[in-house]
Length: 494
Image 1 (cartoon, rainbow, N blue to C red):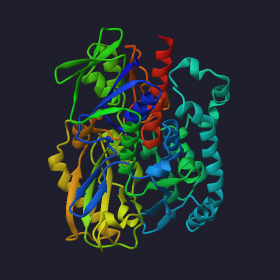
Image 2 (cartoon, helix red, strand yellow):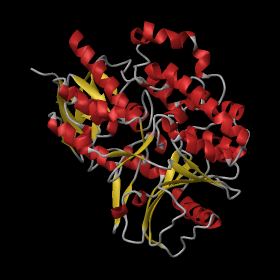
Image 3 (cartoon, one colour):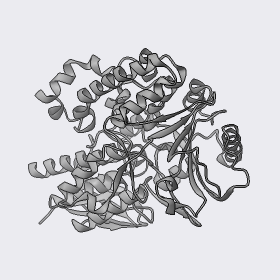
Image 4 (tube, rainbow, N blue to C red):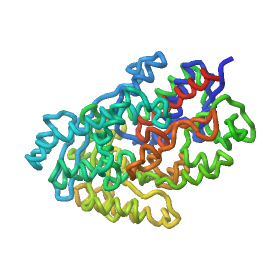
């Protein structure tokens, strides 16, 4: 008889783990509290406008390809993944713009228009970023870092003996300014801390791995919208026999004090050999796992990532000056992060991210119109903030800032929806409304991130952005892979 795995949530991490487990012969059941799969990777339709509500850029598509290959399917038959060019159009407070490109010739020329010195430094910066990737990827991305027996291998010995090469003692900002002198370019490369909801003035310089991933390994878009990935994973899950149920919130992870024994759902107790929890690890210990007060308090002390405020605007005009991805930078970047992480208030001047998928998929908006996904980084939830009061103020500041950049949307917005930090908590039970799980605002953040295997309960495993290796599409999917492999190993031993 095959062993039974019960999975909490149908986000990308949980689905990735469920698919692998079913392919390895486990009986797998998934329970999702919402009416659709995908977690934060979701979509909404407002009149004739379609929006992705979560991740809007894909890196490391080979992670997706490997999952499909493992499941005996061909990704290309279900998902069309295309490079995006330019990767992003940056708008600076002095009126300058820069198109970031994975083409090294184009990128160097774009930087040279700002600074010839920094154009020469760009190649050295990428070499530095690549060195971090080569040293860290196997340990920090593809391996269960908390499993000592797997960490202490000959393959990993080179990294463990050369930790200085991954630049863990400086902050991202401190290392970026070693390469670039132009303040605008420093701001551009500091921005990559926000890819996991962190502060470049506090996060370790090891995160400068991200530019290598984006500019060298490439940046991509999924044709039809990013939610096509969730749909493709659901189809793959169905093909390998995973059973998914929606609108079924899990009430409790059952255990006997030593081992997870199943789930309580709608008052019914369901037995399991293993439990894979795709819910935020901090919230799971607060709401689903009884006992282990010490672990709960320890997790509660970890700093959440930033949250975000999302406006989805159906705009009845077209803007040729905008690309698929656009960034409008704040004047004072340091102050913006200070307000988000230290003061925990909405910034006076937020950096604005605007994704317009109708630039790549015209059918996502009516003719002559555009679908604007507008994201502003915000503090995680605190009792001091009333989002009913905050929302109109931030909206007005956002529209005014866009107007200063030459994009006057007053009277042009015909459809609108909003996602606040409170919504991120309500929809996804993310820790204090955070988007990316835990921040990386300390030198030891990678080691403090919760492991994929419970240390208190045998048979309990975790996947998703709040656990190792972190947030973002490829890392979340890798968390599912790591958790599934750990379950399979435990099953073979029992």
